[in-house]
Image 1 (tube, rainbow, N blue to C red):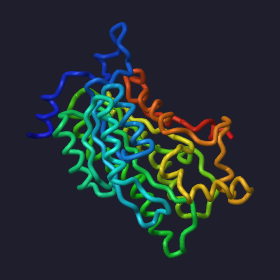
Image 2: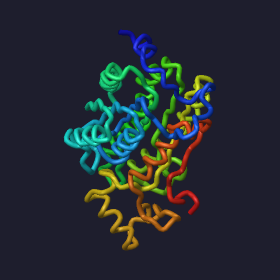
Image 3: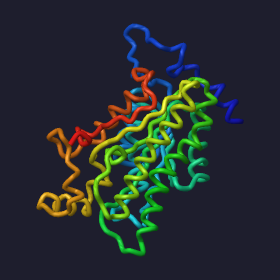
Length: 305
């Protein structure tokens, strides 16, 4: 069955468009009943939190994760067991999930994984390009280029690949929709660093803002909204590991100037993934039906320091 035919034969539940600017009394505009979200980096952390939160509001989930380590990184990635746990948590909310192993750097593999989910659910309403990696520790001089490429290819090109493989399904539904690109507080405010990983991370996350603005302008006539979110430090496998513990300990001891600058204005050192998911749930819902083209800081005031 063609992409066009399958989408048009799906349910009639409307996303926010010109014909849906209000909600019947007593019905929450954050209700996502019957909608479908495609989320990358879904096996743990923010990706898992997004999947569970949206499922609790009625959405079914198509989710992918690489589920293997990347050699240039200094911490372990999520596992297949982590992905299976996300599926279990979504199903515990009474919703369905198609979870697949895929690398956002591999467009063909990513497209195949997405199409499996789309074939199952027959529609798409939400895209959350969440997969990302970071390395803040030094690497050997000869490894700098590889590290740069891995981070750019995952955090920037991977987000573009995510949109590229899923956007046709979003557009053909004719219901509008929402795209969220996960940037970072670093995407709004860079900090001094001579580390290739930090430089690549900041460049990639800043690049997502430009991509978002381009897409938001292009697809606004179709009621497809595109925004970036910019979290500060968030509890996840990327931050809660032995390597990051050493960096934060050094910063607390007055060493490592780069880490010392990563301080929030509000008196909280790190956020929970669920804090970010709550904001994303609003952003993809009809409560934010006129919100597009924005870079939303979720940073506890990091950028005002």
